[in-house]
Image 1 (cartoon, rainbow, N blue to C red):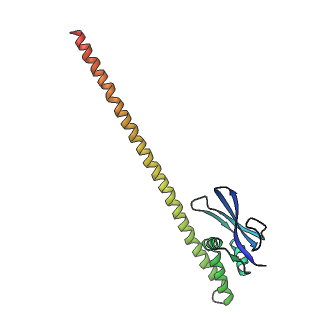
Image 2 (cartoon, rainbow, N blue to C red):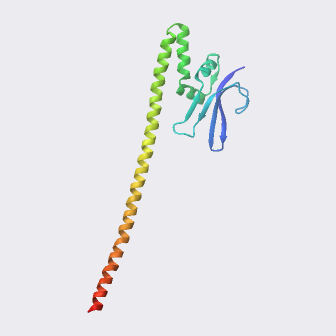
Image 3 (cartoon, rainbow, N blue to C red):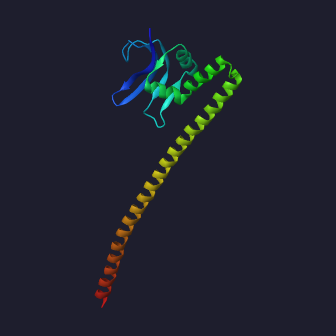
Length: 167
């Protein structure tokens, strides 16, 4: 029975939400699956991915073939690296502690990159709000300035008519 690690679509039209599952290759896309490994939500920026890395590595070691998109997600979350390091442990090239240290270092670096992207997006959003507020203030000031001279002109006109009447 060939097993594939693939995405199972959920959510409504235009708002996809995926489960990452290990399923028989012959089953339907949204059909029966063997194990749910995680979820993938592409609607957020950056996309939200929750993955059982150990479960995914176990399926990969047992011969499950990920689809292209699932492989990209597994690689992004570090499951492919962990499988690679597990192969090094089996061959005796690494100890388990060394492999875990390498994986943890990679994970820290990856989390720093994701956090930097999130911070950059929130900063850009804040800058856009500030620019919009400044533009709105400028428009309001221009509107007030345009309305103010009319009032002054009317007062001047009233003063001149009042002085003409006195004479």
